[in-house]
Length: 622
Image 1 (tube, rainbow, N blue to C red):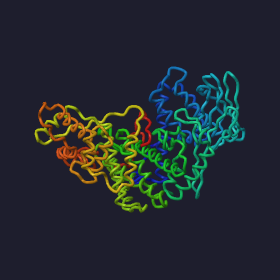
Image 2: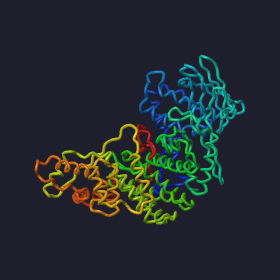
Image 3: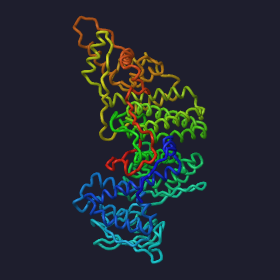
Image 4: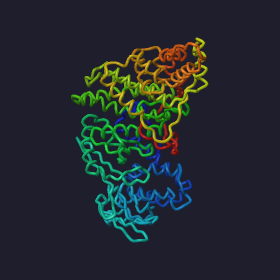
């Protein structure tokens, strides 16, 4: 199954433009399969190899008689995540709980699908025996492991590429006794919770996805709050929406999606993610409506495509800014995360482009807002990438094609009839305010540098070179900018213009520690095209630190002296912006910031030569 994969130039360009079509997805899926097999080989050669060897031998036996059944498991949701975890940090490869043993559950799935006789020991977790793709055996007590016996019907044994269970008899034996699974593993039974399979068909395109609740490597949730029937109905409606309105992307999803993992519901909204090791698997909480599920599938599959693409080609080199601004996230992002987010939002952009033209009334206005906001997110992400990523020649080409897609969509006009310029101004205000609040939260202003700047301001001298940015790393769970910003942002949708900049500056002087005041000031300065608007948006923490330093001077003046005039935040920002020069503006990369390689060709790339390290961590949605 392992072989070199050549990525033709036209396929690369189509993927960079946001799509690629079914042929591109099949190529990426095949390349990911080879990668998974290489990871398996590495696992077998490592400390977990002895524990994984029986399962690998069973998989090899299945592959010889029913290669399709073996491929379906290696391509499936759980295989890549198992391999990556086993290689990265097997917690106990010298003890009975070695992660290598978990491969046995996947080998059982392959044997059942191929109707291939098998006997293999599978670990039990807290009385539960998870068999990804099939289901979970419960009530096994304290047994540490179980012997799983697959008995194939005489007529089916050895039949090539048997697509499903085909009437296999599966027995689970522990010291406490024997459990026999239903002949049809999709049916519930005593102590048996099957993995439901969702099926959607529309206009000749079919989608068949397990609702995966039995993969120990993935954070699955029991589906009690939204059972398989509800998921089935929701997927059917979402699939009709996608096939009717995004047929080319629906073809990609039909070729590449392989499972949905239900997640716990957040306090509000929908949580979704993608593991970079599980190509085509979407992790999502209950979306509640078909439109949201359709959007989630588009968004998350973009992540899968880009993860598989970067197995084949290198888009950016190590280095560059380690923690970057992404307007769709509350936390700083690494270069790869920024690139992932930009690419995933191309799916959102196509979705809202269609919805803003097909909806009516308030729903149409809402879609137009989301379209404009998504476009602004992608454009800002592109400028951040151009300024801070060390792009290879292919990376620069990738971003160029991606930016062209965004520009072409913008030339399509405002399909939602949503107020044009007023809508654009409102989105720009929210974007400027969001970035200012993000800077106050994550960017640290050096106290000594602020004091040096304050001394130059007092002396009436130019600011000189500004201190380098220092963005802190996020730790633990990260929430958004807070309800105060959310209320302000919501008001902008109906506002004709920003709060006057002079008024916003006075409010900042009165309460310089209030982040919301800085958001309003950044938005107002940008809308009025004030000289310091860019500094208020992209170096907010420095402007505030300088303001606080100069304000402190007033409190330490000698008795009997007249207080100096309070420093003006607008004047301070303009003074700093003059020092920063044009390179500080978002959208203009400093000279030499984005480095490209020499070789612009991407044909003839072998996955085995350029596969990304399997030690890379799981990446959540951007």
